[in-house]
Length: 136
Image 1 (tube, rainbow, N blue to C red):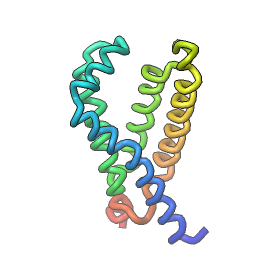
Image 2: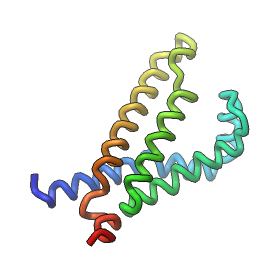
Image 3: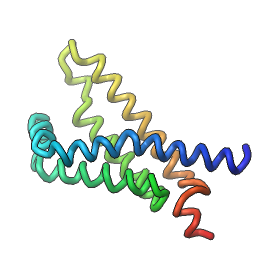
């Protein structure tokens, strides 16, 4: 694969993750009380702190991926965040039967997203990034 194609795919991968996480983080910012309520309803302690952490992780890591700056760390943080969120908010094994199928789909979608993030953490941002520019 040519370097240009590889760099384009690396950039596309980063942008597709941004499309998932940045709107979610902005949604938490603009609907903070609703996010706190959702976290509280899940029975987690310190829901306001959890909402703030989730919002900062999603926004900051998305912006890092967008720029390709600190990409490996941002991707790793998002992978851990996504795995944790999956177990707390998409626990299909504990969901009512009517909700189990969709909850299971969301759980395994998140597992796949975490896998992609781990690949990004392992391989880095690619040549079209601030990380690559700093290495030159």
